[in-house]
Length: 101
Image 1 (cartoon, helix red, strand yellow):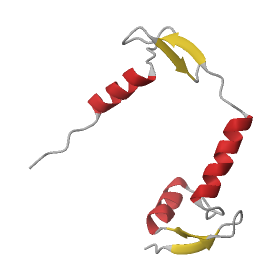
Image 2 (image 1 turned 30 degrees about the vertical axis):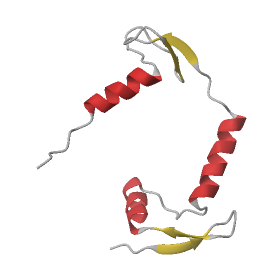
Image 3 (image 1 turned 60 degrees about the vertical axis):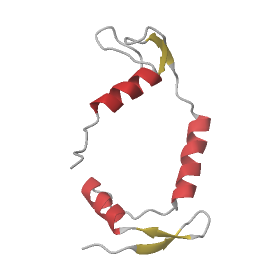
């Protein structure tokens, strides 16, 4: 249904491909407009916004290892908080295992 399209970045003027898969994603999400910037220019803009408005980080105690956890939300007593390392381990353990047939 969709075919790859070549677009021109309004930021740097370079051509980039708007893939059929990306077009499907845009349609699924209800996005009406095609991207106007290539991925590197989008990433630069995102980083510039983050640099201007850094997230406020909160310190909590990791429920798994007891170490310091820095999180971008206000921790609540009724929800566990994990440090980056423990969160990554939990995510790994929860990932579905592929059949090795």
